[in-house]
Image (tube, rainbow, N blue to C red; front, side, top):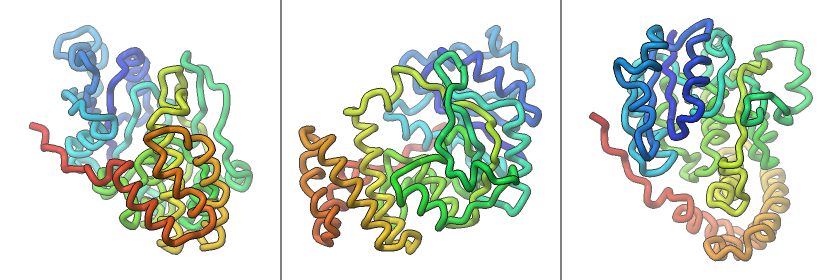
Length: 326
């Protein structure tokens, strides 16, 4: 089994650190594909044949291609098409995150046990300098488990993530997938309900519907924080999408029988008033916020209204296949 590393690139600031983390892997990826979505094609220029940086990493099989430059998730989708299932496993590594040297070695071992569709390892949250400063609030039963490799059941995952509007699993950078998952990551939806805004958590739950999720109880990388990230702007569209995607995942989990109706409704009763309070004065959220009281009260009519509005607001209604890259 081999890995392809997929890098949706935009910020060249950390490129040297990124390549160093890949070069020092105890098990190196067979392929590395960088899709350059930066305005000036900085990654293409820095890694052109004969450049000092390219010559410094002769042991890495790197392919650099121009990105679609039509939005961040389109860059992920373009990478999935370029990947084309040419290795059995793949890993998205965001351009500002770092994988520790044993990342691929430990993920490979987990993929060889029980054949999960997705394996997740713990990661630190770090300052922009790379200094780890905090952990995710992993449930105590998982964090203190004596085994370092776990298989997590889908109902447990729904109950402790979508069912309580929490993501303690992390992001795509600390997860690896079987190649069979590529089409599902290209289409972020569950039971026809988009989870745009929480593409990472939605992908993990989608994988867990197919096989128990592999979980490595070791910190094998870090998520770098900075003032330029989406989470730094609570009124930005990415944060609005994330809030609404928890509503969507709660509904999808209930429809799929992975969340008990009472638990799903209890989560909506907690979450919907918060969304209305936080975003009620935002013009682009007015219609969605208007249905939040009905959702909190369990109205079937409000749910239908939300799903129709969400289909448009999430971008699912306008989603089109990406053109194939040459």
